[in-house]
Image (cartoon, rainbow, N blue to C red; front, top):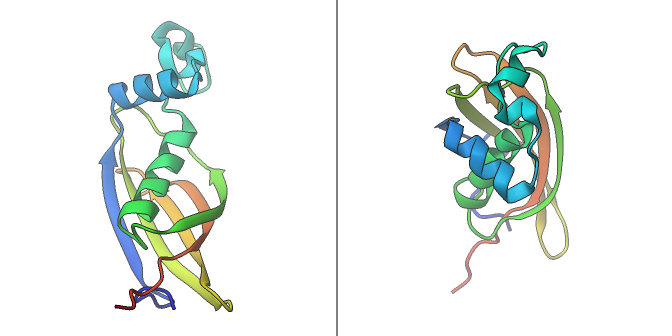
Amino acid sequence: MAKNLSVGDSYELKKTITDNDVLMFAEVTGDKNPLHLDDEYAKGTIFGERIAHGMISAGVISGVIGMYFPGPGTTYLSQDIRFLKPVKIGDTVTVELEINEIEAKSKFDVAKIRTVCRNQHNEIVVDGTATVIPPAEKTA
């Protein structure tokens, strides 16, 4: 039933995380943690500089799932996620998605998708699994 999806199918998208992304995320969510917004404060942390909110990477994963793979009409059921390394402002994150499992239900399929983000040094910064209902094939 899922729209042309098979186990092993994959998709990749690159996104550079900008200062504006961090500022807009803080404004939209209300997460104004100085670790993300205050250079002087962030210098005194274990990171030594401001870092992006971890949920920005999760949001980019969500955007890819909703718009490209599986794409429009996808219903997000859950996301298991681990933040392994900080994403710094200016980092280019590559979102890598791969279908690990498709379970046929009576009215729809449920897909499990491995969700990984790597920085420009090929380090995994985010790792997890999304569970989604992919869009059904069109019957016209």
